[in-house]
Image (cartoon, rainbow, N blue to C red):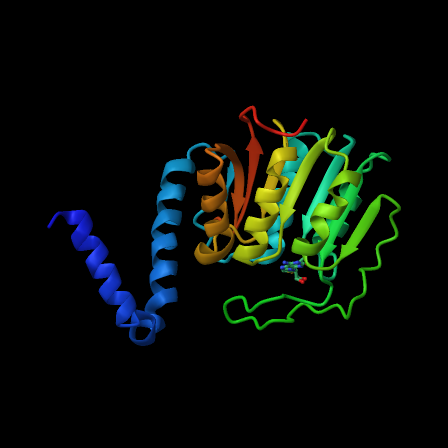
Amino acid sequence: MNIISINRKIKAILIRLRIHRWLGFIENIFLNASYMIRLSRWVDTNRQILIYDDFYNAQPKHGERFQLYKQILDTYTLNEENITYLEFGVASGTSMRWWTDHNIAPSSNFWGFDTFEGLPERYGSLKQGVFNMKGQFPEISDERIHFVKGLFQDTLLENIKFINFSDRVILHIDSDLFTAALYVLTTLFPYLKKGDLILFDEFGVPGHEFRAFVGFVDSFYLKLKPIGAINNYLQVIFEITEINSNRIK
Ligand SMILES: C[S@@+](CC[C@H](N)C(=O)[O-])C[C@H]1O[C@@H](n2cnc3c(N)ncnc32)[C@H](O)[C@@H]1O
């Protein structure tokens, strides 16, 4: 018997034994451990490239993400450039407000996608429904904003034709969940171009946004250039510096 048949036999035995019934409790531990190892490797390989990095920060604070945004705004002189800012995960609109306050170009477009009824799934210790805004959009008086209510999985495709992808896109993934991040990245990929920026709010969470990032770049044979990170790699921003050819123009 060769190694392939031994492998197949073992798998068949494990399925017959219903392995999930007696080892299911370690499933997430193993998954997170595997992505934690990859995250550590990613940091080791990429930290020299970063132009902004606060590692090791003994007191990370979520509010410090605005320092990273400011660095990016200054590095790319984005304050007066026409941009298309796409935010996935808006909740009360804290980050949306920051970007609309700091980009003053009248022709910029800001899109905010969210259920506005909270997380559609459990996220670590956060239960489904956390961040529930009772269906209400944040009160930000800026006519450049379009809010879209519903699951990304239901709303993104029908709105994609209205999004201006010719200006620089800033794609902000702040939806916490693996499923949401992977869906958005893979759906928008054909529309993205060189010079666009992708910002992750929970990059440093191994089993969620980082796992989606790995699945995305591996599946599309894509290289994204990391530009800056804050809060020990919780928030990380990338620039698309090279793209392959088979994409929607
Ligand atoms: C961390 S909050 C966003 C925080 C916000 N950007 C801020 O700066 O305060 C995450 C949001 O993602 C939304 N979300 C997660 N997965 C989603 C999905 N698949 N479709 C729509 N909204 C989703 C949740 O409803 C929640 O409001």
